[in-house]
Image 1 (cartoon, rainbow, N blue to C red):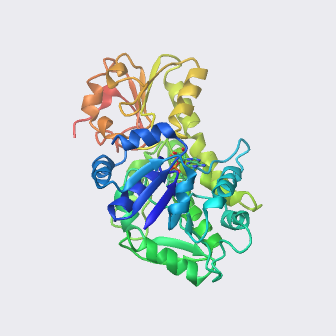
Image 2: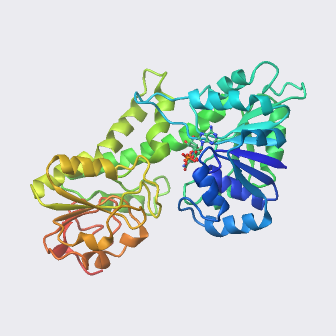
Image 3: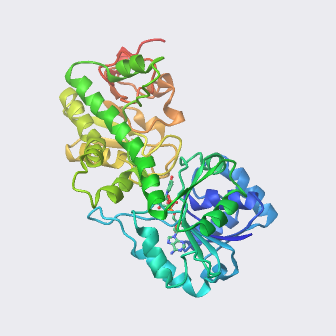
Length: 414
Ligand SMILES: NC(=O)c1ccc[n+]([C@@H]2O[C@H](COP(=O)([O-])OP(=O)(O)OC[C@H]3O[C@@H](n4cnc5c(N)ncnc54)[C@H](O)[C@@H]3O)[C@@H](O)[C@H]2O)c1
């Protein structure tokens, strides 16, 4: 089939475009970012995504991917997948204006296509898209025209290429015809099942998928803070209670629970419900972790050089969107610390050698490059340097640190 992926230069759109082309479809990668379009056509991934570099080259050789900024390609497509960014505004409210603007611009080229809305959206957005498409369109009512479904992406960024194919696909459709048409399309490239929901149910389903993780991470973070009050090491407790116990899989705490999805998706869910304490409390806890770390640092050293280790929001990635490492930097700078930000994966930040002379190192992102504590210590000349690892990445101190805080001379041999 001819498939237009709208937002094909993005973190979700590009891996999806590659998988579709690999499966044999011809893909128009529609993106307004012409620089990214040129970069992709030149065979270069604009961001880190496992297995994508080789797949991009493979797909370009088949000539089944054409990046473009021309919206009229929609008129030559059987399927249109919309996966553009869906941000929240300055008051944390979901925005739909840019999505509706796109639908209106696309309308002259739409006739009988299957339209799959794939961006993460606030409940009711598919209805708004359906309305913007106009009467008789997008309702799958047998009039031979458009079919509109909501088919959320639930991959883990970094693992997209594998997970697009392996994860089950939720399809929110207004009727069976639209569902069957969408399911048949997904079955051309996924190996798993499809599930039929209404569009609003599917929107809610995507949001709770993300929020379940977000709340769980907040619980681990709150537990970390509680353990601190009792002089206990949270990870030591978590490891012990998780071990061989079938009903518990507590995650470890983490100072960088952010990113473009988890940061914003909860606000889509809570905006209309007055009793929404669980998700908004999780936001306060996760967003508050940097201040908690700052207070611990202040207790131990009132001034000096602090290294923020890792600026990306997740390990082994270069994506800095809504990374709390930037909040950590600002809060440290506000208190007058001399702050150096190290990230070998994010351009514009210091190399690991710049740890030298640090009085404290805060592990914000557990990149592969930071896993070997001995190697990290090799760059630190100060034996009293404070190391902060509330993730428990460094096994030498995972169970023996002061709840994630220790000095370099305390490192034990394992
Ligand atoms: N990043 C993830 O892991 C992830 C996972 C699942 C779902 N999502 C959701 O997917 C959506 C996209 O996220 P992303 O991380 O890929 O965002 P992104 O910012 O990386 O990509 C969006 C792309 O859309 C393009 N774009 C914007 N407006 C356009 C328009 N009118 N026409 C054509 N192209 C346009 C942008 O230039 C950009 O390349 C969001 O709703 C997000 O919440 C993201």
